[in-house]
Length: 83
Image (cartoon, rainbow, N blue to C red; front, side, top):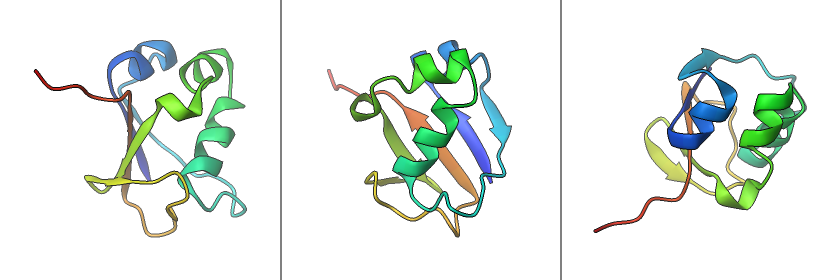
């Protein structure tokens, strides 16, 4: 699956996107965030507060407990505000 990072998530990780192959036991968005946070300092900084991260699977917003098994793309971004 492809991970896409936006705003300060991208800045902290240092990548706009990457291909991921998480282990089989990583089944939900929340578990993927935890797995990513353990990958290194930039990831740990980006995902330090998981409640501040929003996710979309294949361009649809999802909850942290959403399954990732069929995902082609997962996007991570901070909460958005309108104006």
